[in-house]
Length: 481
Image (cartoon, rainbow, N blue to C red; front, side, top):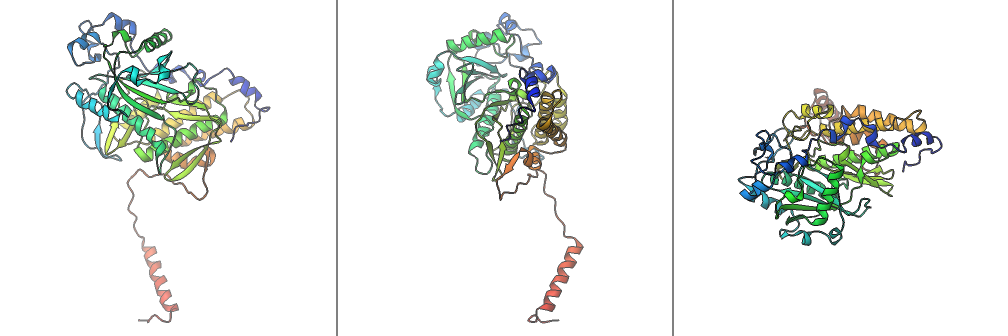
């Protein structure tokens, strides 16, 4: 592995980065937290009923099953701008029925049955039945999304630990949770692929349906999280119904976000390689686009393996680990094609990001309001974005030797990724710098465009005629006419 980088030669550079993480090197506008604008839970508590909400905020209130819940629950997830069902067939490089998230007021039971179809158990459980025994003690809330919260058993979990993610189900969020869970489970299943295989996405252990009130240890974890984060997407558990519906997903611990990691140059190259190969596998198998691959969605944990193996189109590709194993979180905006269905969770960045940086404006220009189509170039541009931020982080005073060569590699990757059409094409062009392919296996990028019709030139036809004529002259058994 390319892990030893002349420690004496790079001692000054390592000292410079010793107390500096990737998050410290990024401008505030580049962090996802600066774009998100979750409501203040204190304001939610002062407006517990729908009638007390101002007309400008009534649109964000979820409509639940009965009048009692409508008065007791104020969901504070951000409003999606387009929430209508849009069936049909997509054009371009993706064909199938488009499954956009929609309001489930009239089809809530159908959406709930679809969610139960994803679960490993179709029974309705309580938290006492669903939670592992280890989660009956102290737990810690680590992060949240607009529809879910994540809890861990320890503040410093180790490899092999599990993470619990709770999704809130109501008539407003059921279809989005279904789209997100379907995407997550299909990406997790790529670890069992026959021709395209990766361990670069979350490894889901089980998904179950729960209808119960939140346990006391989870309520305490919520309170501790609010003390450190004054804003939250979710109301206090005391404001939720007694029999709130949840989807509980248990998956393997993924490490920590690269924003909190201290990264060496060889590890930066490994991160790019592992992310690119995971995207290439998902592109080929699911026509996958991430569309929101900022640093909070890239997690790393220590690894003792020398190489990380990927199976792309039946060929084994090896990426040097450099001591890290990378996992991608699919987040809110990813898109896949599965069983002739185009599954999209959101159709606009406006719902979550109030201040769009250049990368999001570029995404909107490429997508051009066709969120159903497959645009693999977005994956390449997110890789370029990541190369740029890693290069900024690793820029230190007086870099020498191997350090400078790695920076030049990152710069060339960032520059070339703007002309690549997919992560798959990037892997094909840069495999010799990222790792290697097992001997005897040639790797070629997938062409997502329609194959062009090849015409036979006049010269090739003339050469074939002369070749047949010469063969008849040389063969005495052939009768000359």
